[in-house]
Amino acid sequence: ALGAAALFLLGALAIPRNERLWAFLHSTPLDRFELDEDRACVTSLVDRGDETFLYINASWQNGHPYDSFHILIGLLPTLVHPEPQRGLAVGLGIGSTAYSLAQNPSVRHVDCVEICGGEKRLIARLGARGSTTSRRLVEDPRVRLIDGDGRRFLLAGGQPYDVIVVDAVRPNTAYAGNLYSIEFYEMVKRRLAPGGLFVQWVPTGRVLNSVMAVFPHVSTTVVPEYFGSSFLIASGQRLEVDGDTLRNRFAGLDLSASFDPRQIERLRAFFHQASFERQPYRRIKDLPSAAFNHDLFPRDEYFLNNAW
Image (cartoon, rainbow, N blue to C red; front, top):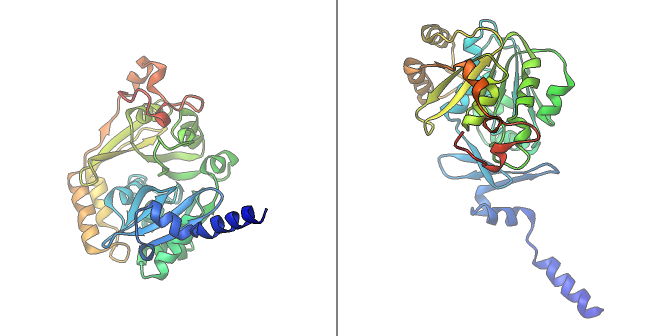
């Protein structure tokens, strides 16, 4: 019994503390690593020199300073909508989308729902270390950062939103299927005000099909500098995305305190060349069931038949 107790004690002493264990699993030195673990997620920041990257359960998400792609997901719908007052961001990440959603002064209130509560605490630490954007996000009285499940928040109801943006974990992540399903997008549509807009990354063709099965008006655009990735903007009403109007509205924003000059120039370059492709709604009716994601058949979650 004494021998067994001694072995147990030696084993307990040999186990590293959380920060050291997770820093090892992230392949990064401990002095470049910050951790926040709760019942939902292991959330961490890794300092890579010029950038700080957010990881969820040891999977890379996005970085700081913010990239143009995630800024545009939040900012662009507030320029398309003629009077955006209330916005909702499902997913916080490192804060870029929710922050950008609030940079149009017409927006009076932003809710951001995130199941990984550690993200909010790590963003606050970034702000305390000197990140202006992180500090402004957590201190903005118009922005409410909510710990919780985004789908449950949508289901609970409440006031409608003029803009809803979704920047959740990748669709192949375990249990992410119900954030990329037709049923989820129907829930989003119900929470939009008349003329409201929905914006999301287009990770797969099946995701685009699922959105188009719910929203009759969908346009997509590409951000070349972010690996050629695209995102969609959708509405239940006729959607007019006019390049000249967007450029004029963007020029009318004073973003000098929101982003650094290089980032503003990159955004200006995007609006100068941006094109929006209206997606043909009718073709959806001709596609087989395998071309869509459903709650009970989250095909993208398992990388099944991704030819779609």
